[in-house]
Length: 152
Image (cartoon, rainbow, N blue to C red):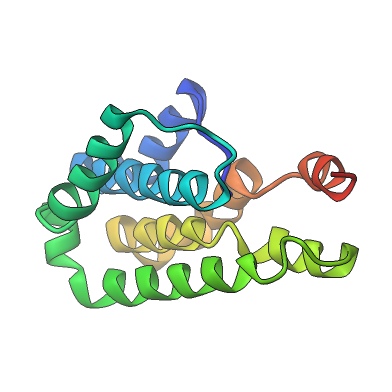
């Protein structure tokens, strides 16, 4: 799953989203939901009752009522559905051989594609052309993480 973002990465995310508060809030909510669901599915991180309440609040209130999400619903809802499908597919590979685990590693972080598209929505094609590759340099999973996971 996408790594948890520290304060510096959150600052960079805000910058990539051009300071759009609603886009930033949506991005953070989507990342939380992705981690939350993955933690529950894998049962590798214990979640408190407060975590569960927060996850459901973000899922049922935060995302659907977010002004950025409402404005760009057709594009974002489609990408969110695809991110879910990719995550669900990744679960079929996580206990497989090394090649299947590598497939899992590649598609597990599909929530990032939503955030990347949100850059386009806030800044247009020129912003994505200028900074899209820097987004991936900042947020894409690193080879060190794959090396760690491949030996588990």
